[in-house]
Image: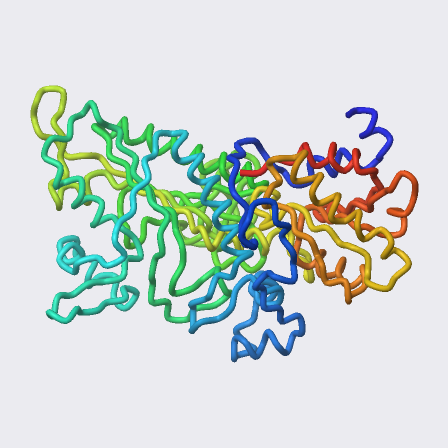
Length: 475
């Protein structure tokens, strides 16, 4: 392999540009015709494109609302489609990326002992009245009544529901703690002004974890454990997130941190000290200081997108619902709680905001909807004689590189030039684009390989392509 990498000057970058890590679990082909081994072809993908700016503006209906890069690009290439204000259809490419993100989240949460649950979106009003949040959260709660007059809200978060669930368990022992329960579900929030596409909407996906411990000291350890798992998650995605001190807001508790992705479109203002590592959301500081309160060093001001949030709740909720466990002395004690959120759909938009160019989407390798796009020769061109090699190469990749089964897409729109299809592939952000062009007619055939995340281009034989792609790892 080292000889191959030396001969092909760009291969070290190509082999690592996707920032993909281990943990692949084999899975069946997605979005294909019945029968194993069918090739995935672009012409059969449901991906309504709106590549002209005026088309995108007409989709949103208000040109002033189209104010960030991720929103524009996701609409242009058919990742999302507006349903109503603040609500979007998530189209097949986005669903694939989200499923991959959820798999990475599952790996990180389960590695620290998390157990996955699924709670109803409909949350009874009496639970929220017990914590006074039915009124204190105001119009942000989406409220409704059923035919019997019973009141509910569509949950923006589930502290009440999970604590009531734990309280219903009368035999919980200290030996079962810590208990880490999480879910990935739709959440609802009646935003007064939804904007920025998936970055701030009325309906979204979130991972929310709730932890129960036997003492404040144990709860602090669990808090640190989950924060470390968040840092590991963002490292795997290649995102340079910053953990900052944050306000507890309507959720409450005594300690809170946000995981912020620094980007210009971010709505949060951050203060970071490079001298001592202090970092905070500016809303937690009394004024707008120029010096760090911890070391008096200079503060750097920046903007960020909140992609994760952690809270140490103590007994705020467990005391209301009597969520207790039997302690080592056989006596009932209140559980110490924490809650931890990750904005799943927000992360998808945030990575595009952070990694994409103005015109082209770029994905962390682990989240790319498809890893490889194969482009065949144009019908009627001089290269058409090599068309058969495209199908052969597709089959060789999926047979020789098992982790890429279901990850290779064939652009079969042979009425378009290779250049036009390469432009589309560049915009969609496939980590690897392989072109069957003029040099495919050589003996032996050579294929043009593009690494979208670095812009590197090399020509490789079939064996070279297989060796390169064998290094790619997916979840």
